[in-house]
Amino acid sequence: MKKLICILLFLFPVVAFAQQPWYKYSPTDYTWEDIGDTGFSAGAAYGTSLAFNQTGQAYVAYRDFSYSRKATVMKFDGTNWINVGNAGFSAGEADFTSLAINPSDSEPYVAYEDYGNSYKATVMKFDGNNWVNVGNAGFSISMASSTCLAFDSFDSLPYVSYGDNGNSNRATVMKFDGNNWVNVGNAGFSPGETDFVSLAISTVDGHPYVGFQDWAHSFKATVMNFNGTSWVYVGSPGFSGGEASEISLAFNPSDSEPYMAYEDSGESGKATVMKFDGTNWVIVGKAGFSQGVVACTSLAFSKSGEPYIAFADIPNFQRATVMKFDGTNWVNVGNADFSAWATNDESLAFSPSGQPYIAYQDQGDSSKATVMYYDGPVGIRELKSSQISIYPNPATDKITIEIAEGQAPGQLSMMNLNGEEILTCSLIKPKTQIDISNLPSGVYFVRLTNDKTVDVGKIVKN
Image 1 (spheres, rainbow, N blue to C red):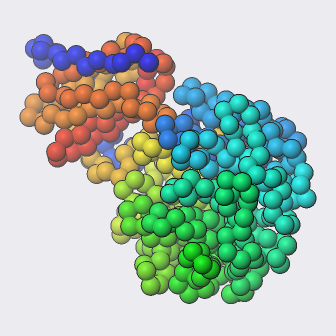
Image 2 (image 1 turned 90 degrees about the vertical axis):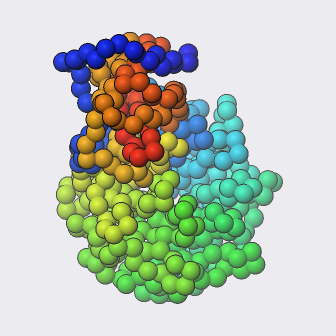
Image 3 (image 1 turned 180 degrees about the vertical axis):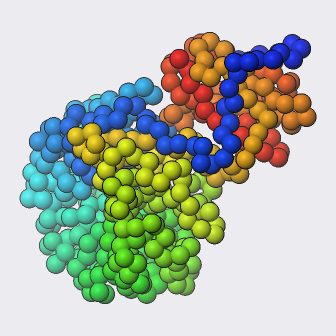
């Protein structure tokens, strides 16, 4: 891509009647918008799982009903969703698809329950040309449910957790040591049968943590971690107030504390998030903070450490909602129930540029896959007003950024939807013109930062 150049304008002030403000007046003005086409998969997509590589490309894995329920992975190339390798690449039907990106080489990996191998666990990766098995296909001793894949960022080893039918449906974790899949500690280490198994790797020591619905403790939530020798409880077992389902476990990047989101039967099926403070599991905000019953909870963190949760909002036609904890309360991110239709299999992730994205099964589009992103600022102070504008918007060849008299100069950056920074320069004069004629058509984020404020907006290139 040809480098963009900032051209400072020393012209006398001009009244631009066609100019449109690029900022939003309040957080409610920001919206969730589609990335690419809605319902972009060839057929119905179940078990959607979203992840980003280090350059900011979005990937989605799912069980593909247009290819005999086999696994398919697609990525967004900046304009369209395209297949990664062959669609339906798994040998047999795939369930509980879980996608993760290798941090060392950006190769996508998918774990799933492999119907072609007696319902055992299989992991495959895309090597740049083909999808290949990582170790042996069907490496678990028996049927594996709720497969969940994660990478240790220290040595880039993949880990898989699952409910182990060969061990009375207790939790098992295995890792690939470069040659074989080996048990991490004892297989079937949980005290009893499990469901909704969720895996996360500690950002401090690289140890795996597993959260699950614990049948040995009245179906409440339990978290265990491997301390290098054995699996031990993190806090008390069965710590949730009521039964916990739809469990999602993640680590806060700012303080390395584990958080768990779940559907809380003790709060009429509403969403609850708890965190481990080093001694106990404590409620984040209030228990049961969602408006009503939720399903398909997915937990993720912004760069600044704010917890976000996505879910299907059952009382509101099962549409997608995302909320975040602002330090005091759980608040909606954009509008609640922003999807056009009912959803399933929510998967929430942040791009490297810091924007939240959500993938889901779109029941209003033949149950195909859809991905949306939030076009507002994340992890910064959202301004109520601004004296900065950009015009024309949409634009074809050039855009002009104008700061009002007395407004402090700052640093301008522009990014595409993949999170790739395509421009950075200093704004010093009242007006700066940017040549965007070489950019592909699409949506771009613009951020202007100075020592007092941060303005974030978007522009459309025709």
